[in-house]
Image 1 (cartoon, rainbow, N blue to C red):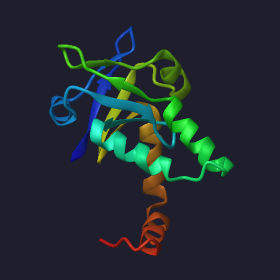
Image 2 (cartoon, one colour):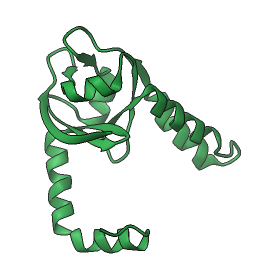
Image 3 (cartoon, rainbow, N blue to C red):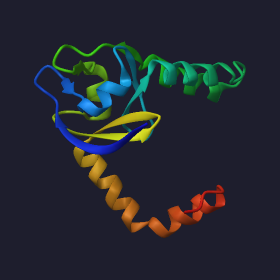
Length: 145
């Protein structure tokens, strides 16, 4: 399980050093993918296979299903970190998601998210301002603390 929040910096070549704690659980190979809400997601190989199996159950005849599958899968690639624990984030994804230098790496249970640091900070501030509405919606979904 992935948890915690870490501040990191992309180097000039778009490489990111993943937290050592995450690297151990990810293993030698894992998958990088477009995430939701403007972040990049990282899945273990098993987690990515599980995601792919869920996507495969969506009806091919449904336009939104095709669009969503295309969005996630076209922005995915298999990764193997180098000896320093760095991964290369493709330039296209860095540009698309606004990942320039300062990033925040977050453990999200089954996956890891990589955010532009400023965008992540804005999201947290927005959450803090709207926490009552968010908690009410979570309750509607059956989640209580």
